[in-house]
Length: 84
Image (cartoon, rainbow, N blue to C red; front, side):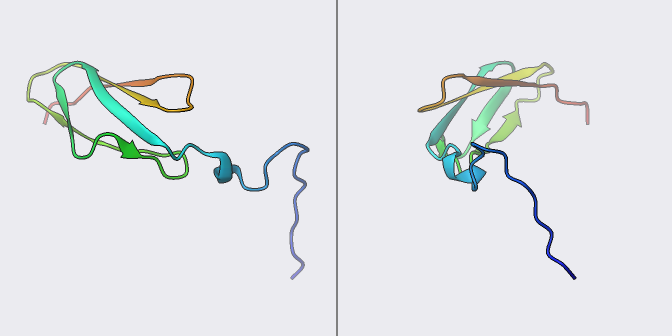
């Protein structure tokens, strides 16, 4: 079977993960009934950092923000827990 090849656009890095963020990412709950669990800050791997978030049992949206060195924009996300 012949090998498939694809054209790589000019300026596109051969390894896109090479330049991905791998610095520490700091998370915080900016509003709502939630708390972070575990290590914080956490080192990103291939540009991905994850956390565990616990709800306090009180209804309401939870907003979490994340910041990292060399990243010019703070990331935020809102979670709306469902009733059990």
